[in-house]
Length: 194
Image (cartoon, rainbow, N blue to C red; front, side):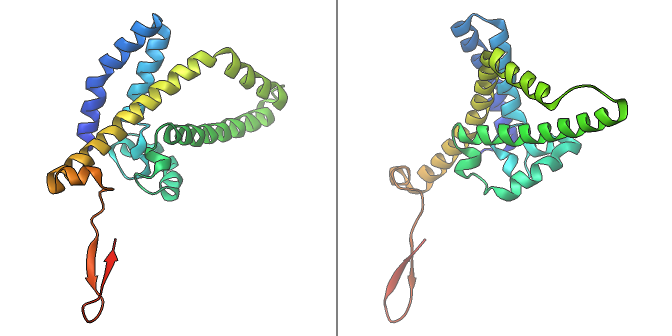
């Protein structure tokens, strides 16, 4: 499995390619900026390794505590953290819920302290309109986040496959990667152990 520094290099070296392909396909500087920015953020701070004490986790600085419940609820390299699309969706939902709770808390305090006049229905309507009016931008940002996360996961999977190949040859690539060991139970009987 590559180190945090290797993952960072992969992200930085792939950034011009991601930006170039995005601009070539969309001819939009806004979409290119969102995809490239999402890729950079996804690769350096919002990637699959937030499920452990990693370089990505440490980059959150004094806010890294917000990822502790996420870490406690997911096993490292599980499909829910490192899986294509689902890992990024779960991180976006997780962070989005935390931000929503913070915004609601701040607005409730502001409403009481400064006597602001707004309704929660207006707020919900504004958020809903934003999601509809800027759907292309949200898709571009999510695509960038997913590409950043997948560059991380693919390098993990590739590194693991390379190590299996070194140890077991082609057989290591074709099997599930788990070597079964035999354990002697009693008087010559054996049992497969994972």
